[in-house]
Image (tube, rainbow, N blue to C red):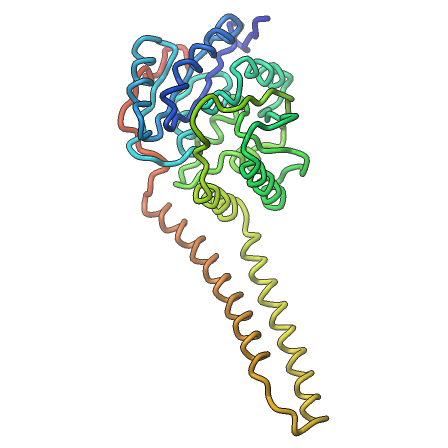
Length: 323
């Protein structure tokens, strides 16, 4: 089945792959993408090397030199997965873009399912799985991240924000308008549209290596979600402050009445220490959240980059891109 774009030709599909230490898999993944998609679509693969410690840059550059449908973007330092995806979206030319990991857990043949679902008129199609082949701790962290996203972002609680997704050209253009140094792809998507769907796909085990998501990277992701797309943490700090102020007032009345009824009652230091530490903790939390928001505003106004591109291959605008 050949998908047709609005101009009457083959649908141009860009596959954006953030690459980090993926030298052992990226060549095979690129080849399988071409075998699975090139007959039905005008395929373009955008490889973004996020300053890998292995020879991923060499492998990606060679792929781009030998295959004109491969674009290569080499970042000057490690900016993180979401920044690398933004770099790929900024350099893609497709009618739609599939975001695929470099570890073969998203089978190339499954991209077709997402694209076909997108053609029904959606702006974005998220993948969903019967069984995720991640480590149990990674799955637990993903569920927690999704629960936090449900509280902070305008999404249905049943929607799982998978990294494997396809977005249309309208959404690509909207997302790439963001200029801050801390992008969160799903937040940018849900900020721009509510026209989304899900598609059941297969999730395979990793072919090599281990997940690059560390606790530190997950915390950075959560902070980006907190501070870029919601003021809920500030509201929570305000509510906590109000709550403990009310508790303090009630305790003051209780202690005063108790002292009147029993003048010989010794004043306890334990309750004072507990109240002091609790209220101080709330104050420090509120100050920390304010500092996080202000710090991110400062870094944005100071011109901190979302990504810095060292070099590109095959990324010159094409005559038929119309952009």
